[in-house]
Image (cartoon, rainbow over all chains, first blue to last red; front, side, top):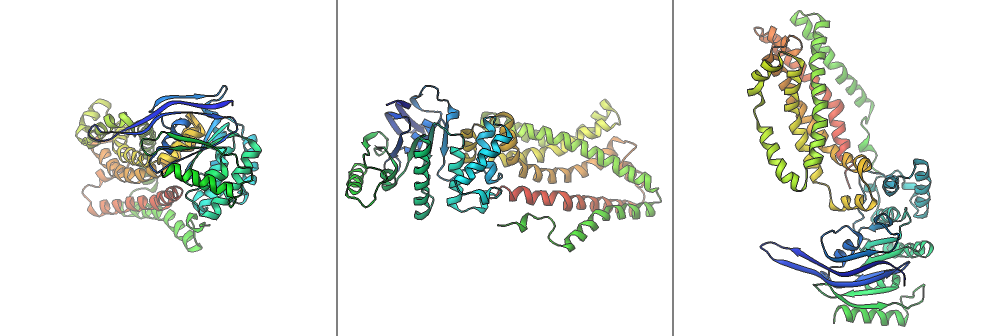
Length: 246
Length: 239
């Protein structure tokens, strides 16, 4: 495996009031390969989101070391937020354009790239709408489009579909899978929905209750597209449930 | 789509009312000049002179307030600086006016410096409060997008600070008008509205009409500029 990100002895302690400390992550070691769809699951409070934030560079105060693969810089990474994090003062077009502005892409090139991404995510009609005029599903489409417009090597996703209704979430999962198969970025996702993890992931890492440690890394060999009602799918689901709730 | 709320002019009646507000201060000034037996040119010049002083002071205050607010709204710098700014804004500036007049004379500079000191604080603290409402998600979205420097200022900091800037400007300019006339009178500068009020100090009718005219002008500016800006600024931050 050619790792794009390696995490070594990662730990995180939150300082609470009155000199109390809360250990949320302890000694986590993992390697994530190029083009891999990697998912973290675990009980509430196991530090999944904190770990993702550490890996993406959003959380700067932690123990251990994050090593990026050769040639990978922070500008090769992007993030999809649970609550979309779409900037309300910008239009859909401008929100998606933002990472290109930051990378100094010329206006003419930017316009073409954004239009292409808008088409891909079926957002053309909403290009000049404000985020407040969009449904949750559309907002997250904007969030994913913004994360993918620069063709990043690593995409972090923090429970990206948990705020959506089940039909919209299913639709977006399928769109995401299609895009991942087309562009092959490494995706590192956190979810609390086991079915989602099985549907998407190549590997699933189960974290223990607080402090979060690696309970088990499960290789998902189910062939794609994955049939949710197949026996193998149920078997894997049972295995993961037992690991999370022993 | 909610378009109607963002339109400033909702109907022809609204347009006519706006035109009336534009004309109203001029009518008030003409009426005032007739009552006070002053030439129209002299009066318009006085209003223009005072208004220019306020605009210059306001522009300086906006630049200083915005830079200071973005530098000191968070982190350790905020812990140190904000209490200091709070003490500074409470400083009774008029107490130092005689000394300033002694240093800089009966000049535009003296009036403008004192106007800046009056107008800057509401703008500064309103921008700070707008910036403090920045959500962690927004900030992280900007960070992960790689926004830095001029791009970060243009696409992130500036738009977020607009509601505070507008609110602070409304309050600051309200105080500014008051301080403008008072400073002009105390400094004893021989041009501007302060000088007019000084001349008619023994004529309560003319003074009252003058104040009324000033209020009409302030009302018109608020209705035409600040209130639509306030609505627009807050509306674009709606999620």
